[in-house]
Image (cartoon, rainbow, N blue to C red; front, side):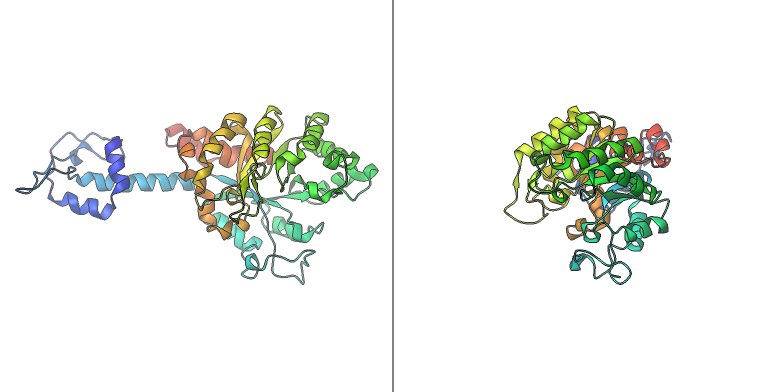
Amino acid sequence: MLSPISRLHCASQPLSSLARSSSSARLVATPDKEIGLKLPRSWLVRFTPPPKGGSNSFPSLPWLALACAGLARTAAATRRAMPRVDSHLHLWTPDTESFPAEVQLPEQLNKDGRATHENFVALMDDAGVKHAVVVQPVNYGQDYSYVKAAMDAHPTRLRGMFVADPRVKASEAADWVDKMARSHPGWVGVRFNPYKWPADSEQGMADEIGAAMFTRAGELGLVVGFMPFKGLALHRKEIETLLENAPNTKVIIDHWGFFLQPALGFGDDRAVDDESWKTLLQLSSYPQVYVKMSALFRVSKDAWPFASLSDRFQELLSSFGSSRILWGSDFPYATEHSDYQKATVAMEEWPAWQALNGEDKENILYNTASKLFGLPAPEATASLLASGEL
């Protein structure tokens, strides 16, 4: 493989300039033995003497340009080959006649049709995303017509999460979960939004209704996702009560626990909620708890690739391990900060991500979600892992 110096030179020089600088070097006749990147030793060169009066410079190496190109192609191919699951997104349509919205859809994310299932699946194809989990958007309330239509149109690609409705009677709460789970084969989870519960409720999501729904979800193999939009610390007590009463129900904490507040994705007034971050890390002591490394723009004040999250990601990894972390985009909101393709690879720019081994990357991008949601086992990564390319 390339030496560290050569790798550095690859990163700092455009390929065209490397190719030009190599034209004056002379090839050395050496045995045709590969030196890495499928390049034979016959591509090695001698240093070209500098022009009279000139100063020494980096050696002119014609194979270096090809090697750099090879590195780029290998990295791109590896990204495409590694399957991904987008564990968090929302879909809707401008066709409000067929699919009326309870709450007005965000115009800037709707008028161009970007959040339709047809457009999203095309984006998945371009980005190498194999499967995705559609979370019922607040705009449609308890009308699941559009998410069901999306899952019907793409039964092998899309799964869904419905939203717990605390308005049902406590005596009917478990049956309500049963009924919802039977309403479509694509349902894999139920989202608990604490702000759907009465604000004056002492127990919040852990009341009789929430406890019955939470327990039955676990019995049915449905994952419960918590949406603590105003900060995880505010809901720690009720979440821990549910966890302790039903330890077999698997749980996902959405969007890093919303540790940056307000969690709008915009605004200079946003600040770190240290208690919510501490709560997230401490919840790792419950083996049934997983965390979505999703909506990066909501938990970072800097622009794509949100590199300030690298150190926090390392903390998250140390607490949960890669087998309890799963990636998600929060599409279409993510497209206000980058296109979808870039949203799928933002974390790959982080030092902490680049230090991961192939198994950890595969867990976060595919395996964790695959096991939680009952998705097909990955195939494309097996040979890459075996060859050491990941």
